[in-house]
Image 1 (cartoon, rainbow, N blue to C red):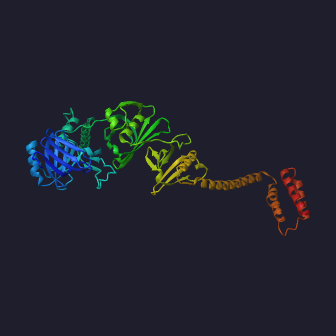
Image 2: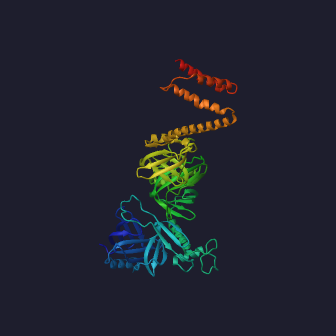
Image 3: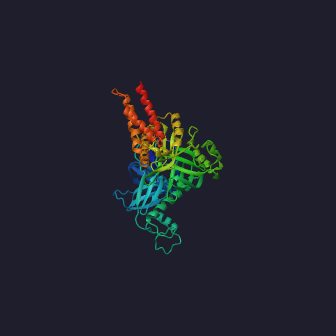
Length: 573
């Protein structure tokens, strides 16, 4: 502090952000500036924009909170107790504002009231602040009858400076019905805007349908309104209305901004940073009428306890759009390096895909030519558990969409097993394909048409993925089983036929004895070591049987003659 007109402080943290940032704070007569020590980014606030200064005792020594006229709040953390006198004197003499000392509530109570101050949501117990939530970090908000949940934007997973746990969600329990005078001043103004022209409501807040609103619903709407106000401060690049999303299900409005996009639905509102987009896929649907655009997210968005690591949009192939982006020509060349165009006039799926690619810097993955299904499509229809969808064999992975979206990398596959459920002829139309992962997790896809097996097997061989084929083993076993079962069935059929014929034949008992017993036993005796030939009595009996049955059973008599000739031949030898 060499000059009394300038105050400088080192090691000052910028509060209200998920990522801790330290830098140098400089106060001058015409305003203040904070410079990030790591990135060099500078935040400046002019004297005319300053509204209120507050002094708090916090975790990192002491904090100065600056509230601006436009509602923006800055927090500078890291001051010592001895810095107060000099800061208060400088702020009063040059900015004509009193540095107020305020105390935080240390009771530990979780029941209080909320106030909206600019871009901050304050939770108060009595008249003392417990904590503040920067609305700029709220990624999504949902509400039930008496509860409102806030989901926060997560920092980049690869950021090495993040070594501590971060808050992901906070829930507020707000019972009862909303009245105009129950909440804070800022909330009261927003309630009055909602409750227009309702003089006979007896201080109850009415919705657009004329029904009284719960306090939780009004609180939820106020947060969304504050989010809208802070988004006006940024310049939108482009917007798409009523896009069909298969996962999560619904129709959304997608607004693009320089560093993030906004996904607005009927009940959910998401803020997604472009650094969270890690994968982009553009895939033709086998119905030849639609295209599916898949956006991979890390961290995923959430709806309650359900996580969605993928967004799956569906577009009609023949739907076209004409759009002009709100970006300067110079910025298109310098920042985006030709990845974006000023205007588009093309099918909707191509325009959306190109804008995502240009803003995120990610490549768009499309199917290759190594795999074509039996019907010459890029995907095969199958089911994962109880969900029937499409499995796309891609160059470096398998992707199952739309529900549940599942990405399987080739490098993580230990082996693939082809098998069929059950056995028998009735189950040969479909088979199962099981991915045995190296980490022990298995994915089993069923209901695959048997016509798809050759193409899938060939693709796995080309990608040098180990294949265990149980279909061939099952086919061999089933073949032998079918043969044995068919032989048994034939024997049973012949037995039934013989019985039926015996019932209709007058001399069936003699024929059965002759064919099935005597002739076979005679032949077997010829190869016996004690065999002594045939005596004349047997020959005479056979001759008499031949004569008596020649008219009725010519076929049986011919067999008899053959047996006699064989026996005579053996006797002569």
